[in-house]
Amino acid sequence: MELSTGNSLSIITWNTCGVKPTKDSNKLMDIMDYGEKQKADVILLQETHIGPNCYRKLEKHGRIKMERHWTSYFTVYSPRSKGVAILVNEKLKPHYEYICHDEDYAGGYIVLFCQMYGQLFTLVNVYNHKEDKKVLGRLSQYLQEMKIGTLVIGGDFNTVLDLDIDKRTASEHRRHTSLQPLLQSFISSLNLQDTWARLQPTEKAFTRSQGTSHSRIDMFFILHIQGYWISGPIHYYLYKCKCILKRMGYLDVTVSSFFKSYCSIHR
Image (cartoon, rainbow, N blue to C red; front, side):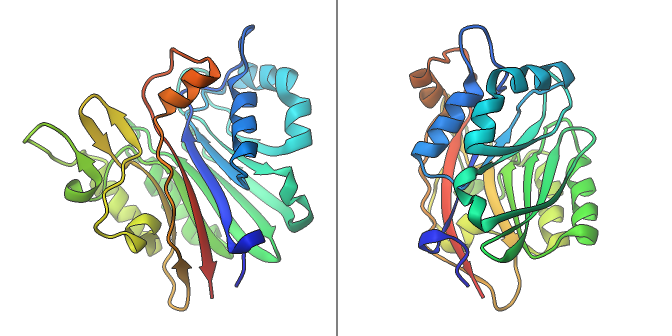
């Protein structure tokens, strides 16, 4: 079953470390421009740091750009932490139909129900904050009751699944964080599969770098149903978000990561 033009749906997931505009720059507009250059269909943003006043400021500085090029769905939580958003490229408009969306009260996830190319989708963007041990449990319970069509989950999960494959560090003492068993439980509860590990089970690829430590904490998951499969390969274009934003003129961003994934799901 073809899902998008060219037999692929292009999704970007990006931990932004905040998208609030300033008098000298507008990071969100630059991210949208970058997404257009990469021909992204959907962008998932984490750590948007959008509170009520910030959201009004975003509308003031970027509303025209959003309306012309992207349809946006934001959580409104705090100007200092968390927050997620889903941006849908307006080029999909002839093939995109909005149904509804829902937000986590604590800014940890957003769920978009829509139809693309005649197929129902539940698109989920997650920021699994290291101090929030309940967000994945809340999301699992919600999706078990509410998901429709093809379930696609992406975001920053702040933990790796496999220490041998998904993490590289100079330290000899490696161990999982307390978030790892919560992520494993989340995957099992919804019968999910990690799209990268499904196609590249032994290949190492990292989405976050900090000093000598490299890890794959940004992931995509789909519902594992017999009769569905992912055609590939899934191509990961790995960049350090710091390098990208430096080229955009943002020099104060903390090291995060960015990756882009193309995949086709067939039935």
